[in-house]
Image (cartoon, rainbow, N blue to C red; front, side):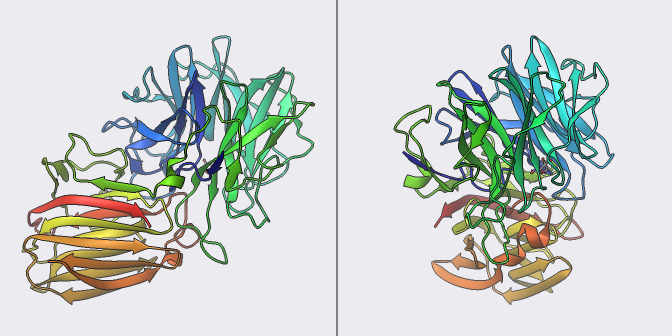
Length: 508
Ligand code: 6LW
């Protein structure tokens, strides 16, 4: 059969995977977004369903406000040992509250996770390896990969950290994972930084503490300097399936233009791995990651990749007791900002606008496809000066395009806003009478994002902005684009009743 990469599309970087009998679990980084650390489940390695988040409770993990795209949860690892799942991760807060490496655990990954246990180890990209009831930590600090034993119950380091490898000479040796297979300890890492020179390298040793010998044909996986459509392949994890076949998940990007730019963040990929007779692993297609992979060794035969057969669609009428897992807040959920009112989602805006880097009245889902359409049906008639509610394509508070319904200088209308760093352009289109349902829409493709409104069956296109400016290469850092729904009250905190009826996102 054939499957397509990415296996999880949109901003789902730094994948880590674990198998428990016939079930697979996968986690990703989520930075400043809350709930954090999405958790997926699969039985076939190809179709993944989100079953929850590692960080889901208010106050469970303090996310640092400010510095979007470069703080929060970095590079989690998921492991399973004696009936317990562990996620070990870094909360990057630049020295703020809750900074550093932590571990959470759960017996049932879909039913909530413990509070964090902070671990007495430096750096980022923690991983765990269990052996005979003992827990060994590998991590990255000061351009080195280190190892030490820890106590998972207390987070205490049980010995001095010891450098075990520095990689093959690429920049940023990081993202280590340690495995014991075929009588060897294998240390899998990334080098080259999470950009176009990204690569996976591996070393092995007969003893856990080394010395580690570099694979003679490193890098074992990279698409650097090739014409392959998926670039920046790195940050891998390895899993052995129930039939003894090996697979690697890793991140990659799908650029949209020349020179390369990407707007979907780093996405999750899957590639087969086999061990040669000399016990060195061969990843992917002789060390390259392909977009389309033909294989007959998947753990479940005759599966169908849902994303190949059907265009993806997400429709939310806000009828459940909880918001769908796909919805994210930035930093935290503001009390009463979004209230499920069955049916519909009541939006109560604060004064923080979309340009603010503080917690604000904003919820978003990831842009998962290059070509898509999203729309929000809402009942909102702005009566107060300087209030608004809108839809945005959002990389961060300094890089977004938005269309909102609002009131300015005594007039109701549509506000079309484009923000690219410090460049900001706003247009106001007067429009009377927003009584009843209005639909704001956003369509995206590799060239442009377009916005418009549908009112009483009349479609009015309002404006567009170039996709290239809302990309990691322009707006920066580690996250990808979201479709955000947001509201803002005025300086007196006045905000008219706003009910969101239906949100839809579909791949086109
Ligand atoms: C992560 C590092 C990386 O800590 O990017 O691609 C960093 N790899 O391992 C943030 O995702």
